Image (cartoon, rainbow, N blue to C red):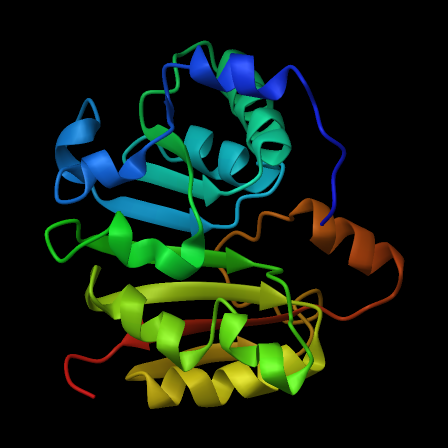
Length: 222
């Protein structure tokens, strides 16, 4: 998603208590970076943050990391998170917002930073063959996620793109994951306990596009 530059975003992020500008400094230390030791979930490519804001404010017993690499997006995420927590009258203490290139996630996540769930929502489908390795669900990326995803940990994935979804089914198998649930029409067959809609999801539904989704579980051995 392209978004216009927002001059207020960088100053607001720098002043934000739950924003981390250099996540590399927390590598091996993410569990210590939250107020309470709890299971960690991470969203890769949080966009405007409406999804993670709703999810984190509704599940205070889980710690969340939300990652994107565009200041304007992160600024909007920061505001959406603040608004969500304001509605329940508490401070956002179980979420950390950070900026980084997800293709280099190994620079800020490690085996010591075990997470139990990863969310990937409507990532760039990179349809051209020469660009497919850039996909967040490509085998090479999934192998990086395996390093910090606990055994039996899950990846929740949603997309509107048929090609990306079908290719991802192969990627997950190649990277040592079992797809335990999938659907080609999330609206008709909800595979999640609770489905929180993203901005993209609402837009695509209005356009009549079917949302594809899956849950993949990490196998102990490939």
